[in-house]
Length: 58
Image (cartoon, rainbow, N blue to C red; front, side, top):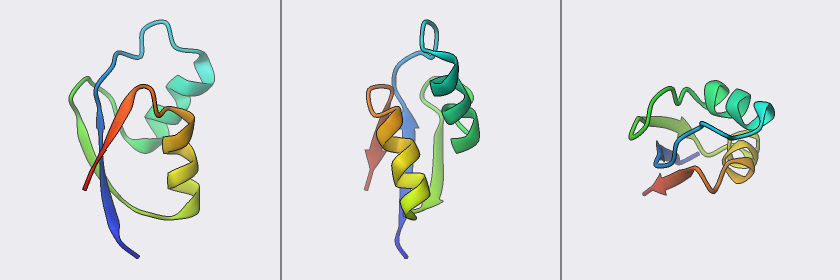
């Protein structure tokens, strides 16, 4: 599988609790934080859930 880099670009303040948990499970703790994950269906589903807060870097 390919890897993707995910960057948090918007603040988690004001986001629902389930979206905050999703950011935590992706490993995103702070603004402009970048993490690298395998592009599995579960990871892509989590990214889709918080797509308004993150950007995928190819």
